[in-house]
Amino acid sequence: MNKRGVGALTEARASEFLTEQGLTVTERNYRTKTGEIDLIAVSGDGTVVFAEVKYRRTNDYGLPEEAVSAKKMETIRKTAMWYMRERKLSPETAVRFDIIAMDSNGIRWYRDAF
Image (cartoon, rainbow, N blue to C red):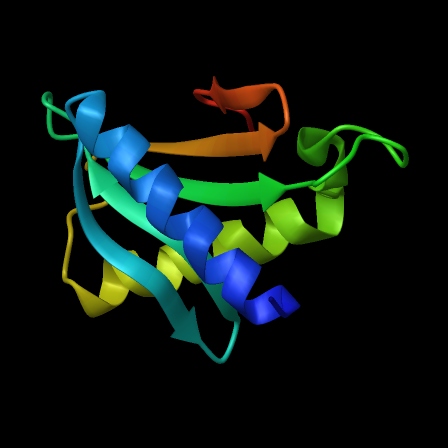
């Protein structure tokens, strides 16, 4: 399977995982000119959750969560702002940035990762 196919399967599993945790996934692969957000969900308390999904088949080059660079975090923040404006969400809306890391050891969910 190619990289794109693995990415799609990984993001689908991460979406299922968040749903199992009680979140409602509202967007997958949200794209704008500023970048992409893998998953956007809403928690039970109404918090909008922007999630970056990272997968590594092996940890030979580090853990998947270590691959979320400062530059990637900034791109996600900018894209989230675009999403908020596009959806006309109030600046008072609670938001959170999470990382879903997946590897042979399973799934790790970092809430409020950045």
